Image 1 (spheres, helix red, strand yellow):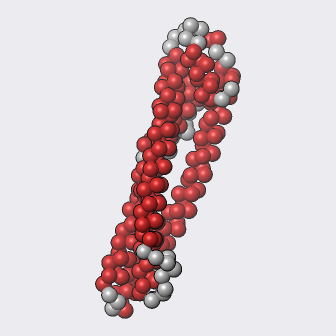
Image 2 (cartoon, rainbow, N blue to C red):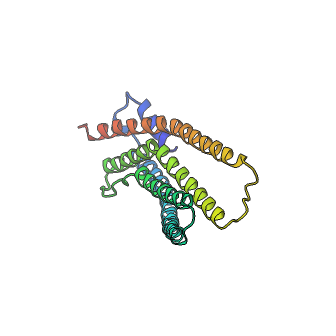
Image 3 (tube, rainbow, N blue to C red):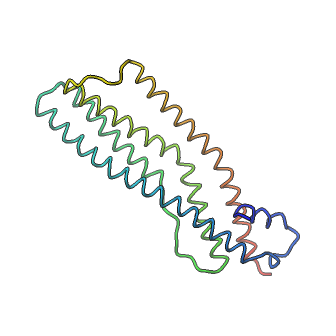
Amino acid sequence: MDFDQMLETWRAQNTAPLYDMNRDALRQALQTEEARVRGEMRTERRGLWFGWIFYTGMAVWTGLWIAITITNGWPAIYTLAAGVSLGMFALGVGAWSVSRGREPERNFGNTLEEEVRRSLALVDYQLSTTRHSIIHVLGAVSLVVGTLLLSWTVNRSQEIPDSSGSGWFPVLIVGWIVLVVYSARKQMRKAKPKLELRQRRLRELLAALDAPE
């Protein structure tokens, strides 16, 4: 029986006293769910750190490119495009930081009540990141657009042939952006009710555990 099934089973037994619940099974389900969520958080954290390091390097390179463009007296359009690209990098990394939020507290005790509080803190964190998922996606889109804009600036200033092949490329990029935002919004709508239900069940369970028998 997994985490959600355990909570639903407890909720369905509204006529049974709390002490009839298998507390060891509940504790194991809570710990298994915590390990799963924290594993996902570690994977996301590694991806974000890689993105921050990579795009910090890209921002530094863009700043150097702006200086090179000004020094060589190239057309202002290249300086402007590189400046916009730098702004997109800053916007994207900032959006990632905002969407991540503050990680849940770890300093809880070992009682069953504290296990429930720890799980509730994790669910609150998941809900927060779910609500900000659109900001995260828009940040990723900003980084992609900034990269493409910088690539265009470098290629045009150095007279490197355009490998995109046709004028359809910008249309495809816009279509991709719309698809990514739509998919993220759809995923958010699917995940949010499940997390809110889990949050409500955990609060009910915590209230029952705290209540005098």
